[in-house]
Length: 193
Ligand code: IMP
Image 1 (spheres, helix red, strand yellow):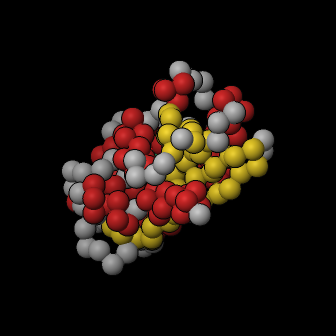
Image 2 (tube, rainbow, N blue to C red):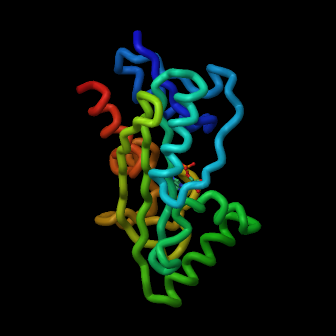
Image 3 (cartoon, rainbow, N blue to C red):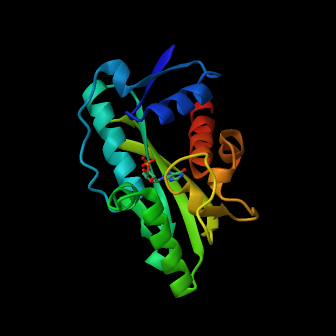
């Protein structure tokens, strides 16, 4: 059976991705399985660049074909930021609620409601040879933070053609439309063809 490394230490993501890969004749390994704890610095300016930094690093360290993802939210009223800095932006507030309040305030002040989530997956199969798969979900910032599912910015993001936030959708409902599942589906189609 062929091996593939998913360059992540995020337990929830690993469980989600391993579930999807169960159907395929591929042994999916994560950093934990290989006792790798070092990660390269994410110095890229785009999701694609950061995903490539991680998948190249994983391949270089192990010689196993490796994929990595990088995601975030881009908000119109914040000049389409925080983007690649999404994790740091949220962590800079004393609580998620304080961050949500600030986003909602700037959205109302600037009368700009649009936002999107994006995921880039990079697959490195040979030295410095990678393929990128992108997934995007368009939507808008909600008037209030709502919902108890999901993580990160889910409580303030309403997907296009929905009237609920992502945090009001359960995991299966979110998976049907999410940026991450769109990018993973493209990766799987590439691998099985
Ligand atoms: P990562 O690169 O997938 O770890 O995502 C970086 C950050 O973007 C996370 O820490 C979250 O704050 C945010 N983010 C990424 N994907 C999602 C999502 O599906 N919902 C909510 N927030 C997300």
